[in-house]
Image (tube, rainbow, N blue to C red; front, side):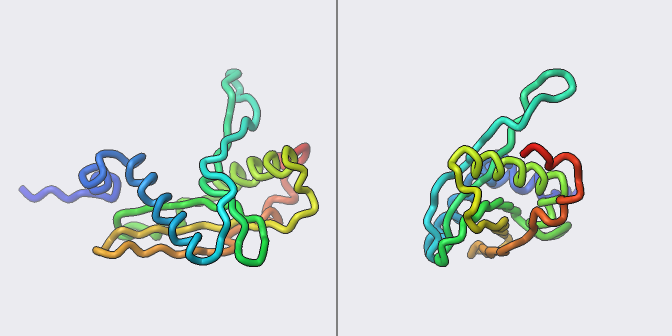
Amino acid sequence: MKKIFGTKQLAKAEFGSTIELGAYGERLAIDHIKKQGYRIVATNYTAPLGLSRNGRIITGEIDIIAYDADGILCFIEVKTRSSQEFAAPQTAVDRRKQRQIIRTSRIYRRVLQLGGEAFRFDVVSVLLASATPEVTILQSYFSEARFEHSNWLRGY
């Protein structure tokens, strides 16, 4: 009987875990954006966002924070997939993930007093379907404008 593997099973078979797959993708993304003139400021930046209903601390994480060649501050989410059989990697950056990144970026900018500085939200898509990884920068993939009418942004 032939067993058909989904994306997560393939990733685990080749990398041991999806965490290892993601770490590999982040290394490829960093190398790629450096070649494009980005200057890395931080990787895997984590900040507390608040408390859950049961009192547990909720944290937010941004994979890469960097300045692009034009000096714009970029908050970058990296998504790595071993195939796009089901969907492209960037489709995993859904509304919930976007909100989490926006909230975390606001804390970062507030802590470092970067309120007036230009910024954007990018996604780096890493696809490992062939022998040569395909790394794509999707600049301004989302923005805060989509969430401005929401109550949850007030206070951040």
